[in-house]
Length: 260
Image (cartoon, rainbow, N blue to C red):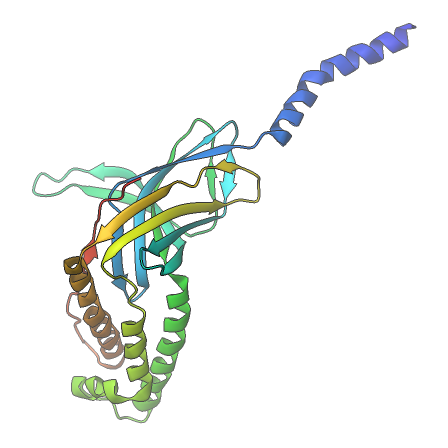
C-alpha cells in the first residue's frame, strides 16, 4: 500500500462522521407528541361549526414541517365529521391593565405550514372549521349577495324594512335553510382524534379524547342560528344603507371537558 492509498483512507475516514450524520438524519423519523388544553371552544357562527383548542407540539429526534392539522369528531350515534385548521394564533405577550383584565398580544398565522424544532415546544391556539359548510354557505351567500345587488341597483332597497323583506326571497330563504340544516351539534358523547400531515415521514400516536354536550349546551348553541341570520341581515344593511350601525352580537360558546 503506497502513500496515495493511505491518503485516500485518511480522507475517507475524515468524511465518515459527516456521512454517518447525513445517513442518521435521512433514516430517522421525528416523533410528535401532542399536548392539549382540556377546554376546547365549541361553537356555530357564520363560519359554520367550529372546534377551537390550544395545543402544544413536541418533536423528538429532529425537526419537522407540518402542512395540515385536522381533527375527527365522532358522535356516539355514529355521525362523524372532519374539521381542518383554518388558522392559528400564538400569544406573544400580556399587557397588564390595573383597571381590568390583562390584554394578550397575539400573532395570527394563515394555515400554511408550521415548523416544530427538536427540544422546542410549539404552542398555538388552533381554529378548526368544518370546511364542507364553508363551501355550501359560500355558494348560497353569493347567490343572496347577487340578489341584493340586483334589487339595490333597481332602487328597491331604501330602508331597513326593505332589506328585512328580503327574507322572503328565494336566495335568502335557501341561505336560512342551510344555516338550520348544517347545525351538527347534538347532545351526547363525542370521540375526538387529532391528526397532522407533513411532507416528511414521522411517528405520531393518535390518542382518543372525549367530551360531552348536554341538551342545555345544545339549546344555548342553537341560539347562534338566530345570530347568524341577524349577522347576515346586518351585513346587507351595512352595504346598502349609509350610517347604519349594527347591533353587537353575543355568540354562544361551549367549553366542555376534554378527557383522554
